[in-house]
Length: 189
Image 1: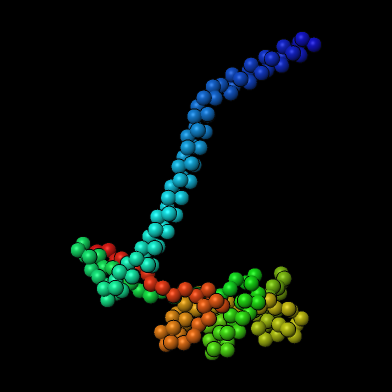
Image 2: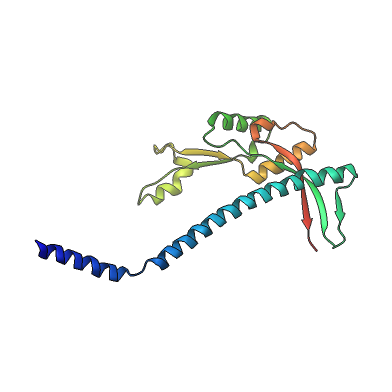
């Protein structure tokens, strides 16, 4: 029995020789932990700076320029500061079926149906390339049930609503998550 115990102890000593000093590994682990903590702190600081910049860009500078009756200025260093009106709008997400349906319905009722992108998707199996080519006219005749997806490209929606607002026409803010505001752009020399 002692023979097995002696062999086990010898194996453990040999193993410890192979592992050696773990001080270097411990130091590297501590360095990594400190760096990860620093990165997390810097990301939080960055988010704070972005929020601060947003307030200055969307509120402070536009308000000050508006009080002075200006929409742009040139700084002493040659930079151009311009305030432009921005319009952001989005279709409700696909998982909000009723809201999305109402938004698409509103577009159609207001003669904006042509901005809706209407995709019909059908999957074909291997060796069915000929059927895929003929699908456009024959899909339902051949027993395929297409999946329909209706979307509006975000830039198209923004441009459309910007035009409507400029013309004094209605846009339902709640249906399209509409945001209208000012944004400062600084073009550096």
